[in-house]
View 1 (cartoon, one colour):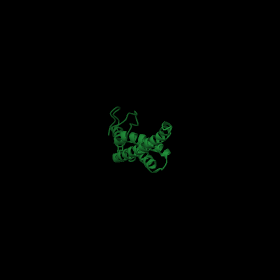
View 2 (cartoon, helix red, strand yellow; view 1 turned 45 degrees about the horizontal axis):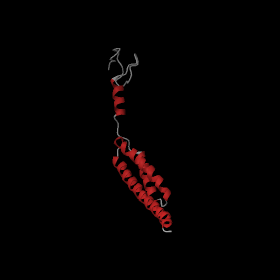
View 3 (cartoon, rainbow, N blue to C red; view 1 turned 90 degrees about the horizontal axis):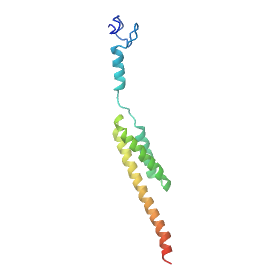
View 4 (cartoon, rainbow, N blue to C red; view 1 turned 135 degrees about the vertical axis):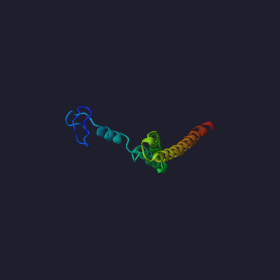
Length: 127
């Protein structure tokens, strides 16, 4: 083939003209193939959100609200970025598990503080 800039004959596989340094059509094709490649295979935010959601769900004590909350945040970020990845369903699963975990712990905290509040102020009001 011939260079579009200087007109000299160059190799058909050349991405840059060795004479003048201008990019050839091969360079443009290589660049577009890189930028329009396949979506990424693993959504790290969704995986981390799912794992932390499960840890929070099956943790067993009151401190496990924290991994559930962090898992919820990471799952939301994973859901926002899910279009860039090959398996967007993973982000949805992580979001659902994290929401369930957060709601269960929210109910437990409300019940525990309600019982504590009633025990403290209910006993004081009876005198």
